[in-house]
Length: 333
Picture (cartoon, rainbow, N blue to C red):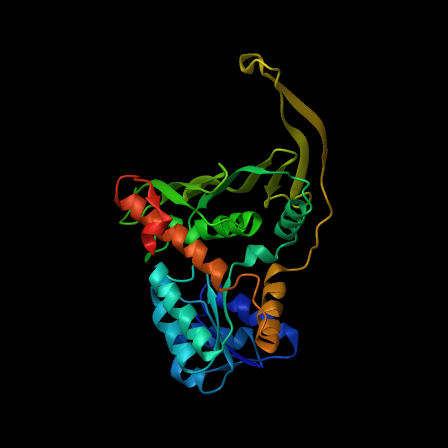
């Protein structure tokens, strides 16, 4: 497989490293910045480097885009029209309409399209999904995440589009539900983009998800709480071990004939930390991309998943611009 990586800034070199490490890929790379191309050549001997996307497309069967969000739609279309399979760094595109256009083009040409929602391939998120699928968590009641740190400021987008896709993707993967509506609020402290924001996403069956994202926090926090009516889970990605802790805690109701006599009791049981697969998530993602190209299978973070995440992000953006109005996801259709 000849695979090209476009963009050699923060994330692109990680993609190059993982595809090169497989041994079954010839990797090519490019960046608009000549200094980045030269640095990457020194870092990755044996990887081909070219000066432009057009030159790259003449050499490869698939392309991974690690470029700014504003370029994803145009570059993605260029890649697909050239007949190459496409992997796009998150977030997919800056609108649901742009996402749908790329999905339809990939389907028309019979090409694999995937978005790099890397966290879906971590041992922790795979364990979360396993707990949910087994019924151990019971009916999901809420999903609450905090993803904060000091920096890195993005110049072409706000903190929602930068940080929230990770946790929205995890929530979508865990619940498998279509989002109904989104409310968002945020603030701009240093320049024209929101550096702090809160999102609430409403799902069927009274499930609510809350996302706190922040570029101006004094500490780095990556924590998710998942509440089920049987078990509850804390996922702390900053923990060196025991990233997942499962709590046998919850609420139980006793309902006599008279409704006002309903009694609430609290169940407090044991906590256990399950063993997790320690394989690098990006390596698993690269393997899934190549497997799907070879077999025609649907990637774990394939078009349908990526489109739902994009719709939540676009609805959040509309809510921000309209003073926190609740935006129905159906409005984006």
